[in-house]
Image (cartoon, rainbow, N blue to C red; front, side, top):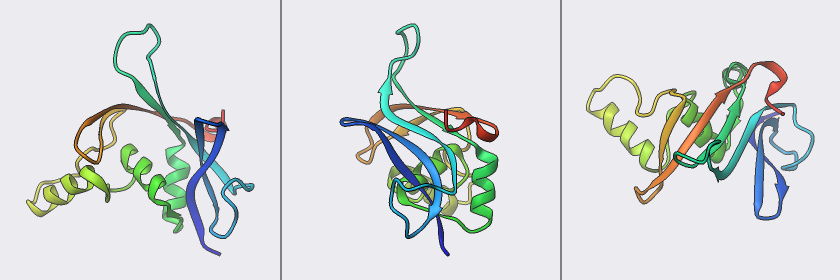
Amino acid sequence: MVVKIRLARFGKRHAPFYNIVVAHARTARNSLPLEVLGTYDPIPRVPIGGEGRKYKDLRLDTSRAKYWLGVGAQPSDPAWRLLSMVGLLEPRFGVEGKIARRAREEGMVGSAGGGQGNQEMVGVQGEEVGEVRVEEVQGGEAAT
């Protein structure tokens, strides 16, 4: 059976919170997953102390994500975008994907973005959206 990496929505109305999960392709969005890889909070938060730029929180067990990608799990489009922010996949949509393709065509080594901890996120129109904080977790700590 086909296995997908996708987002399962939790949280309240107008306050979404997502678990990044591995599930069979034909199961419902919020059904019991095979494994929870991490969490994603898309609401921009103010840093502790009140100073600095707002950020979106992304926690991911990268070793398990690499394993599932290695055995053939297919990420959904939103999951692909999040995995490309961490550096596990090459961006394929939006401005980030265009920059990576252009760099590859010009013969530059590496991908645009990479796997840094704090990365700038550019919207589809090119405006600056904010920062995404990526925290790598080990083992079963992702679902907290």
